[in-house]
Figure (cartoon, rainbow, N blue to C red):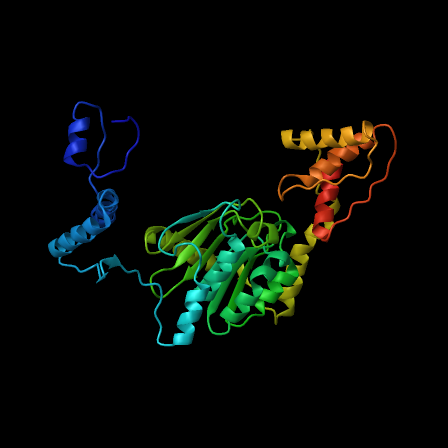
Length: 369
């Protein structure tokens, strides 16, 4: 038996293994006994079922049902059936099926921004199939809101949306918060402390009356890169299999919601709009101060590209070159390093084109660094 930490129910096999070893045990708290036992038997049953053939699985579950007196299996031609949706309106049922999230709503999924569906596409599906929604994010950018806005418009026609955010560092866009607050059945609360905030959480909670609520916890605020192609990590959990985690998310959200630091933003109140504009104006004032100096060096893949450019120019006298690279690989950094080399012996100017103002502002910092 491997040495280290454990948190498993003690059985006869384990008891024998640790009998001659130093060990530490504790009594299972009565309030936790159901969870501890269920977790232990989940692992046991999963192992047993994974080792059986399909027909044997059905026979095993039949015997189990008989022992516990609970029919958890419905058979159809010796196949297991899984209920995916139910409604008394066939049109709505079809829409629920079409809009169903691609990832499971009964188990956990990790989003890394590398493979699988994007966070944007899944959030849109979650919005379309939820009964109530709570968001808690450090900042909201208009570039991110537009990705999910149409779905939120449809959702808030008859369902409730609550959002907690901040004006920290002026990172949020006024237009985005205003647009959200103008949706029906929507409440927005904001922390107006621009220099310090206790809120760095990013969570998206989708309540479903069926007991299959889901929540996303991770690194993504509401911005275009974070929801689409950024290498952000977010864990999706389900009420069905992680009820304790989801309950904790709900409880924490309610605590924040009732904290006086987070104040309701009303689009009809001029004072609220003025206060938010002032709180967010810091970002615009600090745009030219966003850079600091570091000893930056290119990564190995960037060095290869820079060397290829050098060879094209110096050995082949080719001065019209195109660099194509995937998102997140540092194309701006490559351009900055290349420009740094180009101006060593002369004062050459640079024309930098981008389709968004934010990219130009970020790139200025990169080149200055």
